Amino acid sequence: MTSPAELGRTHCADCVDGMRALDDASVDCLIADPPFNLGNGGRMFRAGRLARCIDMDWDHIDNGPWLAEALRVLRPSGTLFVFGSWHNLFDLGSRLQRAGARILNTIVLVKTGGFSVSHRVLYERTLYAIWASPSDTGWHFDYALMKRLAGRQADNVWPYTPPTARSHPTQKPVELVERMLLMATRPGDLVLDPFTGSGTTAEACLRLRRRFLGFERDDAFARGANARIQQLRWARDFARNSRGVGEVMSVRPVG
Ligand SMILES: C[S@@+](CC[C@H](N)C(=O)[O-])C[C@H]1O[C@@H](n2cnc3c(N)ncnc32)[C@H](O)[C@@H]1O
Image (cartoon, rainbow, N blue to C red; front, side, top):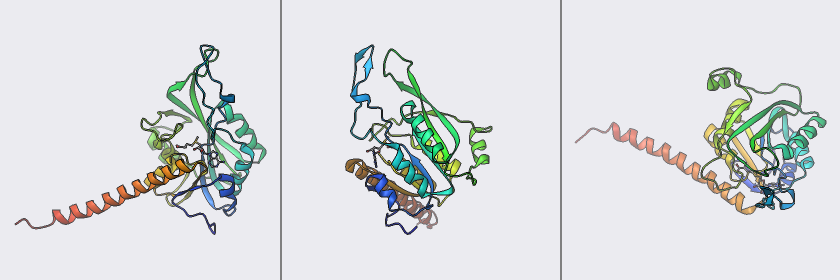
């Protein structure tokens, strides 16, 4: 990749601008958790009464420009995971299909908890992730590993337990992103997260030895994600070094 964007960290930038600086077909996998456009003008109702507002500044996006860039920077044999709820899923799906992408699966994420938006509709317990390829030329899917992990042919209904400790209001569980990476990437692959948030994809990449590149528009979230990456690197280096010390000590003659 000839791009100026340094790998292994998240850049505080709008992802459309960030991706414009990347070469065509230079990314193996994209994990995108865009704003779900949940805001609804800031109105949420419980039992018919105004309950609370989730009209956060970062929760609005036009999915056209970033999806176009995402499909450009992905290798034809790469894949893309996009998180969504009914608020943005149909928009995302229809844009992907119109752009010629192939939708491979919709992964249904069943939450242990959920969120009540209103007492006039059902209690929401699902999130989704669309898994798609920019073309029809073939993509990586580790069928055997997924079968081994599931104990049978892996299906598209996955449990979703939100992380207990969170530094971002919509932080995703790292195990979930790890499962996506194991399924659709190989060690050394370049994974791009255009909406890094707290850095969940970065952590999964570090654990599984994939290369990472991220963009995050909010300066505080970007700094938090880079601190998370740095801490993990320190922990990994410390574990490596102390293992070395332990080995040296264990072969030392006593007395
Ligand atoms: C749903 S959250 C991502 C959460 C993340 N997956 C995690 O586990 O922490 C979406 C993030 O995208 C950021 N964002 C919104 N629009 C953006 C844009 N155009 N470019 C880059 N980041 C953006 C928001 O600041 C927010 O942190």
